[in-house]
Length: 140
Image 1 (tube, helix red, strand yellow):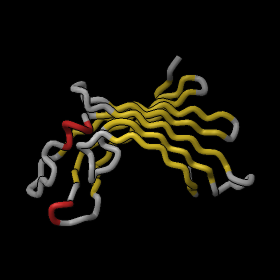
Image 2: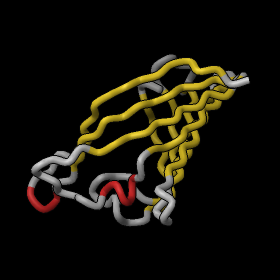
Image 3: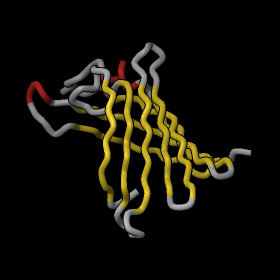
């Protein structure tokens, strides 16, 4: 049986930090609902974009949609996250993250990320991207 663990309401801003023709940013209201079903954690995040006077990318929502669902599976020291986003017109996205402590450390982790779809970054949100990255992170 799934249990609601928490709700988060937020005002968010995301930007690529560039100016001029390369500027990509958006402001939005978001609500996240967190559930736990046994060992499976689920986040349902929904958002609504604010209109602003400096709308650098008016079609962003066509690619980002209005929400995502993310599943988190912790197993011993492993954490796997799987995210899905769809706007139901073909510009979908899926992301898979994996992390594991390096050398028995509590603050350094191996991190692997796979992404397929639209909206992986703001600079090319309207281009389909397929990539895999491997690196390190200091926080999960």
